[in-house]
Image 1 (cartoon, rainbow, N blue to C red):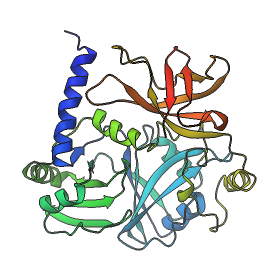
Image 2 (cartoon, helix red, strand yellow):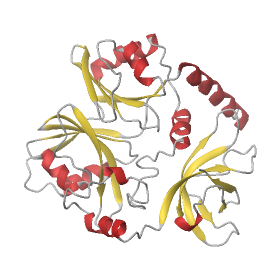
Image 3 (cartoon, rainbow, N blue to C red):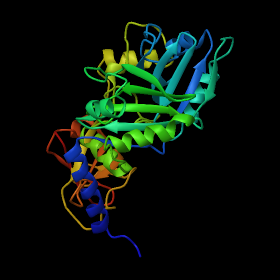
Length: 337
């Protein structure tokens, strides 16, 4: 029997109620990949290819950065976790991680560096919520998660050959940790999550949290259709570090204030039982149904209702909070604060 939109809303409401009560949930993404980037030239190569300063990352910490193409458009956005000077972990949420791999390989010419896909050997979880650090402290009492800032890294062995890494990312717009475990550690990690009452959550809850907080994600909102300034990723660009691919374009856009679009949040204004009225890649038209002014990149459902919220790119002249635009399918959207 087909599930109705009311069934879906009820299920999400129940999950959300548990999340609110405990203040934490764990989500295991089906998208994204983890690569090992090894070799004496790996760190320097990434520093020359990406927007952020990578060369000065301290050992056992991480930094987020962007690969851009010659037009200054986003190839991928990912975390660089530094295990040592010659061993990095690159973690992307992109639905097409080959973009990052192919781009780095393209510019690996004489450098002593190798990119190795470790996704089949490393499992990822997101532990999300205001009580995420406290809950992880209960589950993994051997480590201290208090007062950690974004980019701090923790690590331990929970089984023979089973390394687990914890990175504070705030990936959903609130306190969030990325947990990466080697295959031997997975049963122990899941067992500790269960004992600490960190309940598994579906992607629908994760999407609701991140979209409510206007957090874009690679492969959905961060693609080669846009540049980092349009996506609001100014904090991932080091304007003092020197050249990288796409640097001149991004510098001109910033210097001369030529950014034409912005990433915005929206909510559905005309509620309906049809929760599929807004879909990713729907065109957005001006309020009078005229010309195309943007497109939808992410959609989520609010718990307990059929109302949809989402993220979209719009021309800056139409991003005033409270203003109303319309999708090509005829659904009105209100721009969020």
